[in-house]
Image (cartoon, rainbow over all chains, first blue to last red; front, side, top):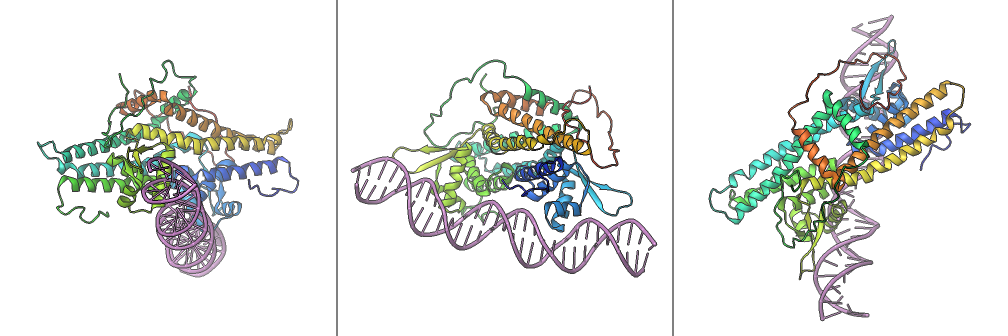
Length: 224
Length: 224
DNA sequence: GCCGATTTTCAAATATTTCTGAAAGATATG
DNA sequence: CATATCTTTCAGAAATATTTGAAAATCGGC
């Protein structure tokens, strides 16, 4: 635990404690950066903006986080691009200020939106392309070994396609203005005491000893 | 696009196309590594195991992906730890083989399970600690400026706490054996044509010009 | 308990990402 | 339109993360 060696002279008055809590939060949020797919500094800048609730300018951020101007500038721009911070102009002041989105769900929606755009959509495009590669390999009649392999391969790609289409679709729903409904649903679902009835069906041990597993694609339900 | 300069002599027979499709898939899946929070090689090893459907040994993997023994060993161990690959023993063979989970939803559940454990749970623990830091700062009576700041700070931490508690809870539900229900729900939700009725309530423009935003924490629903 | 086959480990080498700082680019103001 | 102020850019430096390869540990059979 690295705490900033006695934040302020006195030691225990509210301002000092607040400062300490903020610093801890910034550090913790910075460690989560990987989970959001952004750089550590970017997460720290966001943490600072969120936890203080203030609009801060580049110099404020440079000083508080002890980072370079370039780094601060890049991070802020990225946060704005991600839609989790916005530029604020103050009359009579040439400087630009920035403030963080304060609604946690809105923050999360912005992140989901960006990550779908940056990760899921390109992945889907690639999967469609990949599926097409093996298309011409379909021999018409003879059920050769190769033919079976190609079929299995395509079933695996199709299973991924279907999964990520579902992810994308759910994501869009969550992110869209209408998404508030999903947010509510999620909250309630999470709060629900427990599942109505039925235990684990039975332990289906893997007995298959052999190689060459056939893909059990497509099923989303379970056994009827 | 780097394709392995003519996979096999002939050029167009099924085996060659299959190989090409596999290589493309491995490359694409490797690029997604960041999204899963694993290293690129680890993702590529997983891609290879998934897309071939075979059980492969360390040497197979080293050769096909052109990586070192150590790297292959580490990646495989990690995949097993994550629960998306398993060790397979073949009678009369000292070598260890590995095969990937083939059910896409099961793979995803494993990833969610691990990431909750590695990211969400520690984050929650830290947030609880951070909330406690500012506790002693609560002055009893006088509504000072400091007191208000502390309250706002705590409201912000609480908003995050509530959000991540929801995430954790939903995650557990999804991951648990019972989670099949959630999977089904997700699939159906994603497939649903559109939202029943009602448009966006109205655009609530941010009019606040001043600093020092009060956190609007806690609300998950909307206005009734 | 020893042997050879296999896996694991880890310090050093390499690759990748992130950060800095100074210079170039904006932009409002008089 | 010159100036002062603020922002962005980007090549090189620094910090991180990944990979290698060879040595050490493990394992199963005899």
